[in-house]
Image (cartoon, rainbow, N blue to C red; front, side):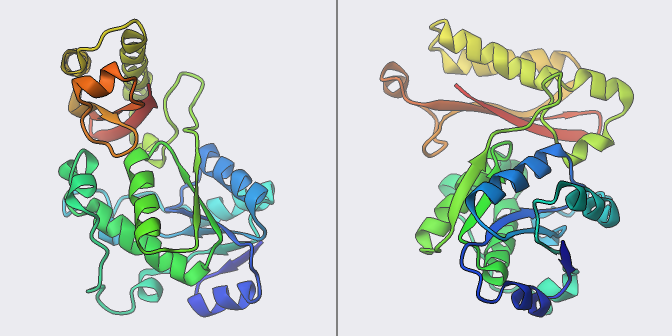
Length: 280
């Protein structure tokens, strides 16, 4: 595996390559990330991964400074797996040599709801860095995980509207044996918090079962799930059932017609904020 830190070296390594698959990450790699690399390898060659902690997507009171940076450990993991040909690991001066005044602004109806409402500016920061990384890598295919469901939709819509020649592939959420979605932020959890963390996914599963059993009162299901988690020591930002196609709230007509839905959740346990989702 080649490890490069500059855009010039990256382009030198990829010159003439027409079937590049790309997996952007912020590092601190876990098996979920590695499964993205394997999917990328099935759809292109060579595979490029990036590791970059993107300041633009962090709010002023979020965890940018303490976000885990484990580059050498990440390199070791990627070399053992042998799915990645080039790892692009730029520093901030390389990717942002001057203030990033030109930014991508997702539409309010997608970018300012759910995660976008809780984390103002988040999806603008994500979209801007993804567009810049796509410009550097020039991939034919890029792979994103479904755990970040809304992010996946934002990136897909951005590619469509800018007519970018990049196919966005979605990988199913990778979970631990107890159901907790794998995340780099799971390392923040204290032992007792880690033991309770699977409650988030279990709550989404219970809501799914209630929907399958015929309950069509979406607002009641959301409220009951929120009350349950808040009553077990969580601080819920949202539990929301939305239409898969646009993340709008489903109407009664949508529900009656069998509209495809997804339930998305974000909640804090202790100081750690976790997100998850489940297609219904």
